[in-house]
View (cartoon, rainbow, N blue to C red):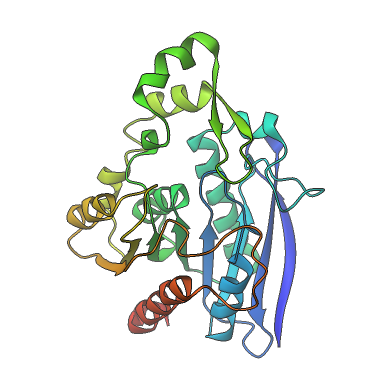
Length: 278
């Protein structure tokens, strides 16, 4: 039987990280996958619960969590509603959160190695972690970015510095979401440490790069840049897939969207052929 257990941690700036672990009770010591969501995303967005179940049914434990500054609260777990916290997010805070979650897994889940799956900005975080964290033994990125500054427009930076914040629009809700200038200054002050393409060259674990060919948020060229930076990686294209592989939020179907199922199948095949992470 598939089970789901919730947990919480204190993350960056004493904000809460909420997460859950999906597993089959016949295989409680299965290898562990940690999923990292993207910008404006969260652990329960769309079909993430079905992805978790898919991997649990196929021999893995699957941990997903909300980054501490995702803007998602315990009271409203299915939307970004805490705009003050969302606005104060930085990449360095997210990296700290991922470190804390990996440490939690190592200390509490009986593992000494993990596989990371990261989507979009979470893919960028995953690449940095895989290049630097000794307990990350496999990496899968879905629609990963190759530069954190691609999430805003260069021409916005002058206004951002002057006003102290900018706003981005949530395409689904049309809500304006604020971003404090600390996101920009953190990136500039830590540009070398947060250089995704440089980190990609230092990834020495098996790495699968998954990319939709019709992704307008992160184009196919970005995936090719990542693959070119690391010749040992494998690039898998999902034909005519968008940034979220056919999922949406809320997602009420009981089965995975066909393109997201392809993503899961390719990811599972990659893990099963990686003898370091069976």
